[in-house]
Length: 259
Image: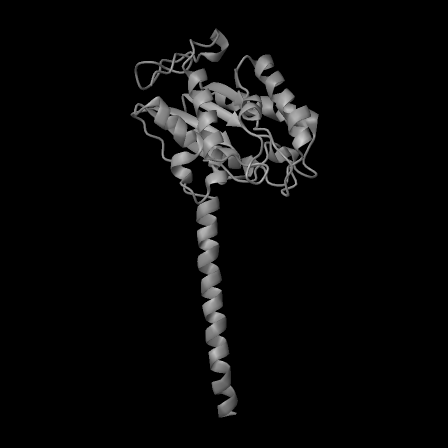
């Protein structure tokens, strides 16, 4: 019996080590996939980038995501008086009935609580994933999603999702091209909010993505440049301009953004 117990001791030690290793890996995974919420800076003009993995920067996950995602590039382009808050969450859908809805994450509430001056919304790629797509539901929920930010006085810009290619992630590229992007364009026109056609931008500058879905550093930089250019245009129509005075002084939402 003594010999049997001794022989089991190394097995228990190995099992405990494997469990500890799995816990560490799980913690790292959660930290990478769901990073801490960004902290708004009251001293700067705030831009909330709301979206899925292409906002998060999954295409540069281990290649400097915090510096090379499109929100990070945008902040570099606009200059120090602007803060671009990255509220991108991997694999999330706009639709609440999707398999992984954006609204089920703390980033949804935090993006509203940030009281951002400008909100950039780029969701829809994961709504084109197996079993998620419902065109009428997506359109109505997108309108409601925009209105929640406009009710807070933010200037909203809708971004179509990037072009998608053949992939193993279950995202149907033709749904993005034929349904998601046209709906985003239509909602922007109906609500009178800004539109940045990331689909067309990426169609013209890419022939593929590393995994068929996610923007690489080059494509993210091009998207950031297009967004910065749009934000630097003259003021939007009156329905886009908040009635309150800009809390930080100087140019507010709806005013030209100057880097």
